[in-house]
Image 1 (cartoon, one colour):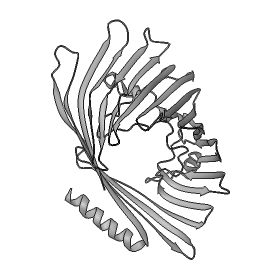
Image 2 (spheres, helix red, strand yellow):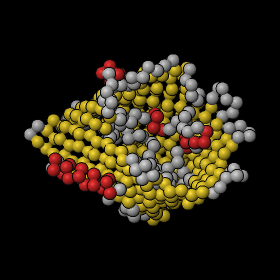
Image 3 (cartoon, helix red, strand yellow):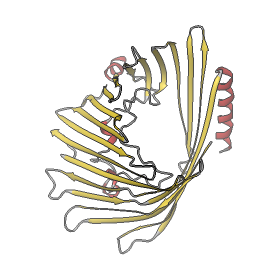
Length: 370
């Protein structure tokens, strides 16, 4: 931890001297499972510490006679993962107002609609973060499951980015995926990313994107999406489609999210995803998941949330579909920072009359940000 603080201070001083305007932030997430278990007769009730995450980021910019330069550095450390420190960074140059050039980690510049629909309720160190497609990790991880994110373009990992704003209504983005290891230029060009966003006043935002791939069995993915917070007063809409062009097969991913705030005291979010295998697609032929999150504000600082969800996976080679569900009521207390959350989590799955699993946990979480 001392090394992380020292590195953070040095980075802040370097950025501060290089950029005339700079800001920095830090966040610590920590939580615990007070008790957890399952319906196995031989199971024990256990507890565990949730991985504390320490995150520090700083941004800066400077105006010159050849445009504006800027950059960002992000460090995070998972305290229960052998002390590993992950580093992200990007440097950018805006020579004119309509052109932005960046190099490094894509920290959301190419993102079409901020993962539309998947984010209207976020967890605090493991509280309230369960998303239904992950209902059965004991069955071999997330393979064959689908989340809302698969239907929305999320940008690249690392590389070169050019963002062009020809007018307030339309902007274009292009990215070349240069990584930290050497790759053939032909593979880099095959992995090209491109996206266009169209902003319609009073209606919303339409986005189209293509994410290329250099893999022999992958011809890239095509995305289309729509987001609106103005079309219906008080209603936020997100809809996305991802079409994965695999070798001799395709996958169609559909995701959507709806958020409604009836008043300051009450609101509800609803999100869902559907995945359809086409041709010789080897994973599940049909996968779908839905989740509703009612929210009631007891006071401006105290909220009660009740995420409830259901998922269904079907395969033509399987006799029985895989069915999962999850209920995760919790209370969230925001004190400006820190924020607290605690609740109860119960989830289960079944595939056939003789195969089922039931799990439960009592998590708590805390976040401090400054």
